[in-house]
Image (cartoon, rainbow, N blue to C red; front, side, top):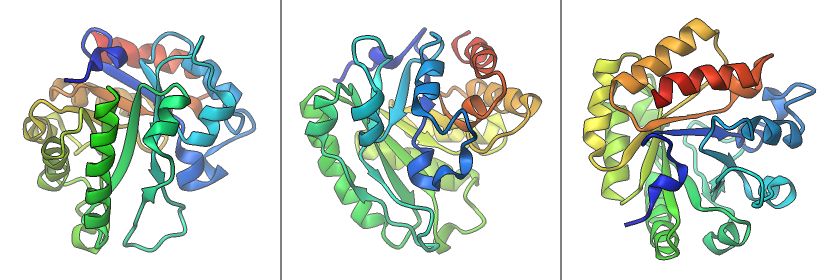
Length: 248
């Protein structure tokens, strides 16, 4: 079994995600957050257990001697795709390891007409990564006509969690269903695969506190969060408050 404790604190995980520039373009950034150095500085405040980057940012901005554990996203797509998304491999597992990553991530759009291609590719990459002792995280995002309007439904999200378990992922990142009772079903469905809730779009602290509290109450392993940290005026303060919820 892979040692997942490398991205855990008190048995919990809090990843800083900075892959939005690939997926959304620079629309999520301001004058500060468009600079990867700014976000790398935020990641070093001691509250995060890892950072998620694409290959280019890792190659140019990550320093394995001083930075927190690295997770590299192996696939990606632009925001210009249709309602039936397809995200295929862009970085090899070998390259991720060479860049200092201890884990890899891969997005599968559950419900897309192209999901089979992503499922097959993930399965191959999971074998490669685990053979090198790397942590494997599945991003399981409901998308496409089959699940339109139900992207946060209890059973749809739980299906993604279960797929991650069946595919042998160490962790699965899924959207929050809106309340701890329904999200607990996703945690149950994932079995020994740890569930990480996505941070989602920027919201105010009261809403974020309630959401992350519900996530942890449901028994999740932690969170993978980006915009609600580095879009904030006081990112270090937000991350410390999040840590109090996640690690307590």
